[in-house]
Amino acid sequence: MAIPISTNADRPAVRRPWTRLTNPRREELDDVAKRLGLHPLVIDDLLAGRQQPKAETFDRVLYLSIWDIDRSDRGATMTDTDLALIVTDEQLILVQRGDTDEFRDLDALLEEPRPLRIDSPLAAAHRVLDAVVGDFIELGAAVEKDLERLEADVFDSRVREDYRHIYRLRQRIGQIDRASSGLADALSSASDHITRLTERQSHLRPYFTHLLNDARGVAQLTSTEHQSLNALVSSHQSNVATRQNKDMRTISAFAALLAIPTVIAGIYGMNFKNLPPFGWEYGWIATSIAIVVIDVAAYALFRRRGWLGTSATDDE
Image 1: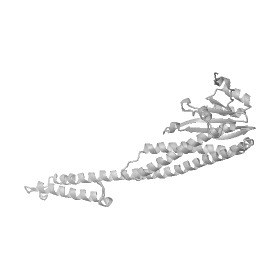
Image 2 (image 1 turned 180 degrees about the vertical axis):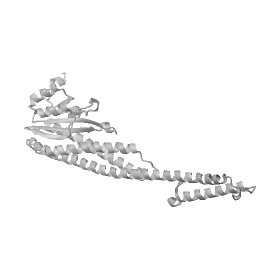
Image 3 (image 1 turned 120 degrees about the vertical axis):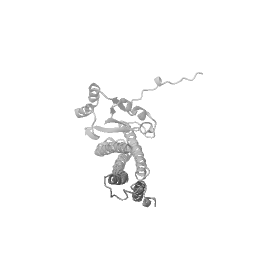
Image 4 (image 1 turned 135 degrees about the horizontal axis):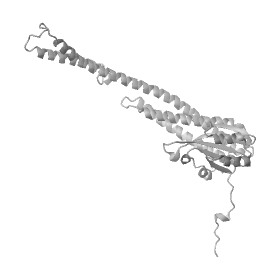
């Protein structure tokens, strides 16, 4: 007896509680607005381009605009795009704006099997926000390690720290700080509306509370990292100034060593008959020896003071 093989066509179609739009045109947004009754201000924001992270509520609609910093494949490269979430009781609209090559794969994320099932638009919104905050946390931890390495370089006299690395690190910290603090503020201002949305799904409330705490934690971490980097930048500038002063001392010392024979040769180059030991047959030898002795003494003095290489006190 043959066993019937079930196919996807035999299964009832499962309606996904989310819709994803990428760089949508006005016609697409107008169609969504008609279906969900969106406020015209939401459409204007989505068409205007990059918005600051924020949360707004219109009747039963929650509108979240955030900056999505995706650390793809857990590499060092970060991508920065705009992500808007429009949450209603019936549907979640995800709007991604920016370079399509840098978009986070939200469909794969939402279709991934996890303990917390996607059985509502709010659950889908939580999974997206949780992935965004998760990347914030990993990026913040990576910056912390970079700061530790940079601190070791700054306080190691044998290493010349790379100012370009410092600039890139400052840029990354600022990027994560602005995105995470903006998301934390948006979730905080939307907390009342999220509470109303979870009236029938009370099991989601702890997840959103945890999400808000994580976002705040990342914002506080990046703020601390920013202060630490400022202190390292000050130390770096002090190191640069110290090296420049040392270079100037070295240049001045060499100029002084060259000036000694120049002055003596200039004096003995004048037309005077009574310059000692001008009339002596071996006077030029005595003068040359005097130049060498004075230069060696000056070199030893400059060396001892650390103007030419390492001083004796530095070696101790």
